[in-house]
Length: 264
Ligand SMILES: NC(=O)c1ccc[n+]([C@@H]2O[C@H](COP(=O)([O-])OP(=O)(O)OC[C@H]3O[C@@H](n4cnc5c(N)ncnc54)[C@H](OP(=O)(O)O)[C@@H]3O)[C@@H](O)[C@H]2O)c1
Image (cartoon, rainbow, N blue to C red; front, side, top):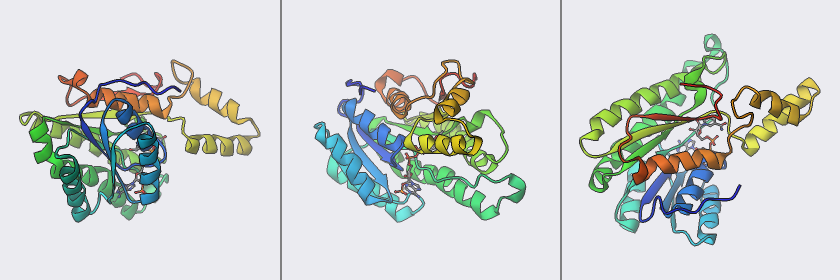
């Protein structure tokens, strides 16, 4: 897919927490293509450097900071490094993800649920609390990455759903509480994302059922209106839109990006 070059985030400093090979990478690349300076944060330095190099190869500006969003000092350091390097923060995107337990709730260890809440909910809140003063100065905004798990209650997604449902509740309250400071808080809820990870997974399902990966794709995509699965860059472009001045009157909202799999 050709990356759309826009000026939607011209002169903006965008911090992305939880930059991995999937959506996190796409959000960074799309924000940079929209003119933003991008601060990349996660625990694996080598990945941050890889994504930063892709942005810089296109002429973009980046800062990579190793940070665990469950660690108070690391998050404070991320803010300090951003401010000392670029002087401001306009957008915070909370994307961090770790694979959920995928067991029925009846057999889910409480510690797995706690870990999930600690990362998704308290990690997102810690980031938002720490960045609130800087975002107040810039009249900035926060985009939380949620999931289509909000829209279904399929077995084995319980621990993930508990964390993402709480993240949505928290995001809506933050929109109300931070609105008077001029800070917007919005949510993007992707369904399937056509990443390398999902390609691998469809390959495994195909082997198990003796069909082709293309058939797995067709069967999955047939449940959506557009009969295809969204690309990571398409989801990232929705994040860029919500983060941009074109969404200046939008707060407390959720945009589902799922090719029409669920209607809300
Ligand atoms: N993948 C999907 O199909 C899908 C579908 C719907 C919604 N989503 C949502 O989309 C978002 C991105 O998912 P993705 O699979 O594409 O992930 P990704 O962007 O490829 O990677 C997310 C990254 O978060 C980082 N992370 C985990 N724990 C962290 C911590 N404590 N502190 C800082 N960073 C941390 C990890 O990097 P380090 O290990 O280096 O820290 C990981 O690589 C998630 O919020 C997910 O819930 C994904």
